[in-house]
Image (cartoon, rainbow, N blue to C red):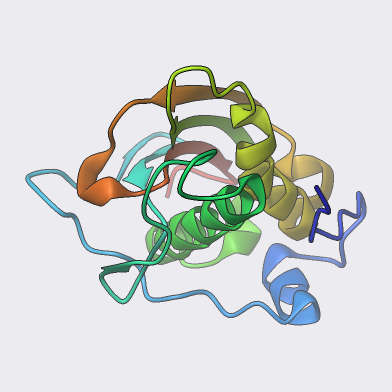
Length: 167
């Protein structure tokens, strides 16, 4: 599988500047799909609800990775999912430059029994976080399989980040 990411450990001064350098424009922050909030804070920690590969309220990557979608399509689904997460993070923090560390991802990959490459799919999210935040984007993570996900999305990812202050 050929990766499309361009990982660099030392991005320019801030995450916002790095997004511009990478030519990435964040989508509008998604709205909740049910009775929950997209993010909640406790002190300097911010917990993002699970997001999926959506654009303007529409599923972009639907189906099971390994049968209906290739690993590369799953990788792109994880990347789009993290773009949605970053849009929410920016909305909540005011700027991605306030992020001092991405702490944890929990990712589910919709796939059939016997698929054992969830980690390669979720690299789409992890690679993008390192591209944007450099070393501050390296994180702990879990990548697990799911038989079914809401709206038939290919991946769902939760994110936990630390901000520079609790304001």
